[in-house]
Length: 137
Image (cartoon, rainbow, N blue to C red; front, side, top):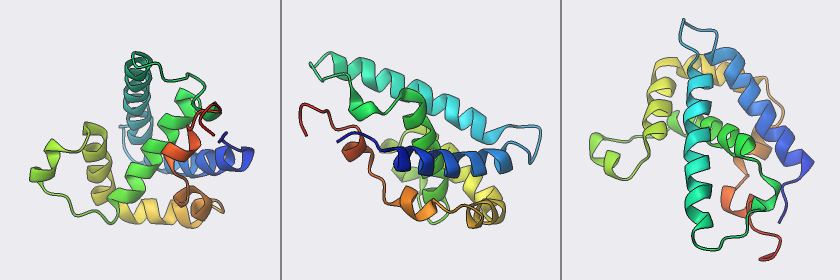
């Protein structure tokens, strides 16, 4: 499957709404920092999977789009998550950062998301489906 224009727009809409809100709360640009961390994770992930002969088209999903998806996804999941330190062995560091942001700024995040039309489309997205290789489809 190849990522569609509608899917890209949903990712951009949710990410941009969260970035506008979270980057302007304090002197810390929370969403921009989370995006950069996710971008580095995705780059490492793609370099690692290249060692196993994985086709490199990733369904047309760029590293930047994947980073936006995960940054926004982790923030939204953090609104309702109930993780404990015990879970830290199984979650990447960006999930913990997103969880902390969601715990501290939940009302602001909910307000930002309430103004976005594509939230439902975004929540229905699945990374594995989006990056499925054209060869595998």
